[in-house]
Length: 217
Image (cartoon, rainbow, N blue to C red):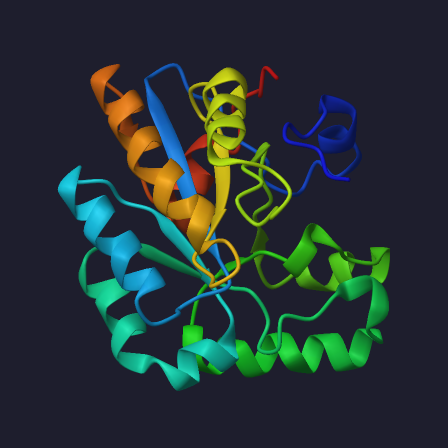
């Protein structure tokens, strides 16, 4: 069970996390978790390039170490990168010191001020520590591309029904998500491009410039 749209009351419980960006212009922030993965991440980059779209990749350090060329391509093509721990750790199931070491190990490769916890799970102490060193980026739209029990059409309809200007969407450039991702991402890019939307990367500057604006959820 997972929520496609993160409720406002959950967002309000963690005001220091970024859930979406206040936005009057037609802009979406596409994010991709768990890569870089051969073929999958490369395919995603090709799709983004076709629409001159920029995105943010929250990378697993272990995958960066295995696939440095793909990681370099992400950055060379103007996308943002973020820390997603080295071993894709679940914060609720990991001792805080072990978790911090895993984050730092990933940081040695990724070198980013952005952090997203795998599964969106952090303990209060983990969150308190990480907020002092990173901008914790969550989401307001979880696409569900990882859900093998859903179908691409349902996934797509959820996205276009729930997304709005300033939404942060989570996709996954992973083997598990690939079957749905490959059918849904091109449609999402085309749909919103036809509506005049831009797709922007999340950067510390972007986040800082909008952090003082009230978010109307």
